[in-house]
Amino acid sequence: MSNTEKTRTTVDIYGQQYVILGTETQTHIRHVASLVDNKMREIGSKNPSLDVNKLAVLTAVNAVNDYIKMKEQLERLQAELQKEKD
Image (cartoon, rainbow, N blue to C red; front, top):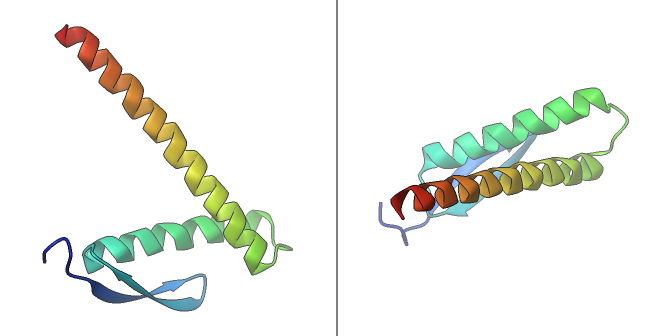
């Protein structure tokens, strides 16, 4: 599949079905959906009174927090590698 060819993938996240349209493989999209579903279930089990909208926002906040931490770690590692090259 080329990077511009879009595929439709139906996934289940927290008991709801979604059709995801994207250029990633169906395997990748299903993996991402599974991670989102798992994180929502984890947060939901710790906070059973949350409505789905708040649960979704907390899941997004957690995901972006993890992304920022990983990005910062990658940037530190890249800087270290650059120092070793210089």
